[in-house]
Length: 521
Image 1 (cartoon, helix red, strand yellow):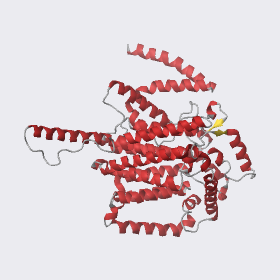
Image 2 (cartoon, rainbow, N blue to C red):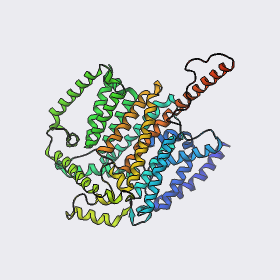
Image 3 (spheres, helix red, strand yellow):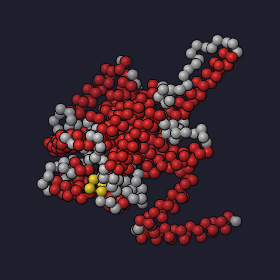
Image 4 (cartoon, rainbow, N blue to C red):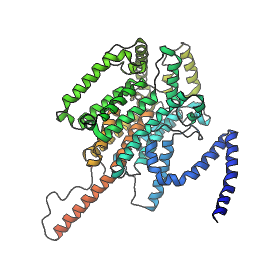
């Protein structure tokens, strides 16, 4: 019977393999779709078993699905899968609900209405992948992805005993961004992997290498990976556990990750890391201890060593440090100052357009022909270097990328969401159980840093909104079990006090806690 079963399996697999091989060789969209459906069908048992850790791992990853129009990211598809399972489970188990605080839900609903109303009142959706003359649908998809990730996180719960594992999955998924630089360095034999990976990091690396010494080679993916390592160490050990310990390998890895993160050539990366460390220092309460002189000495020593050797560092590292009052190579200085002046010119021009789109935003769709022609004239020097940016809406400032596309209503919705989210994350931090304290502290520091940086220095709404929703969602999923256990404990205490009152006994002082939290009511 075993041999007959194996023969039957082979008789089914071989024709299927021939058909799929022909479909792949044909190179048609339908062929790739057929292969993708077969892979999905075979992987359903695996997804049903491990969909939660896979979704958490995918949230900060860079992988895409090439067989679908527009090449959607894996995180969005897994998020939809999680939401679908939660809806099906909700029809069976009425007690299992989405753990979405009311204030967060209302703010997200308001933002969704603003986005849809603006889209319908202006140019529409505009999808180049679906054959439209209008571009910009990717930004609407990015915002939809942010909504999906938050609702998917609200449908799962992370057990406290697995908190460290899920934390590492959540942050270390960003290491996949470095694969773009790795694939480019490996050569043309591995270029097919770019079907599954974004190419922006490789493009920046190629531009720098093609210009020889006159170009700044920027390893963007390496920078994102190092940031992920820094966040994991802060969430696992805390800032005090990294510095104030005899385990010197921690501070060596931490410092090495900071240095390597500067290979991306982004000033923003170094500023973000510095702000996270700053907030982490205060949220851990280290400012109330004798640790302040220790950290001040470390900062001074690191600064002196950097200034003394900055001329010997790669151009990308010097570009990352160009916001400091230090002398750097002229190539890196010119490259950095050029982008700064470019952004300032964009902001001066875009601010004048705010009255035109104050009540009804511009939307995210734009005419592809206009963008292409403008970009060509910019390349030829006929128009200013930022003219094409005014069409596609990449204004490089967080609030400008909200008020121009979505009007004042987008600003109201965003700050409504941001305030409610910060309140929830701070509540989880201040009422955190000991086993989750370090992770909740890092989430609060990261959220505060991202919000401050987004509102002041740099931001793109369609790209950064997913950062806020993913951090909030991870905080909700991480603290859901602890919060439910605490509510159950409070309920038992209340029932015990009521039973004591019924028996004629005086209730214990403080034994009637408020079961409902104002944050999650």
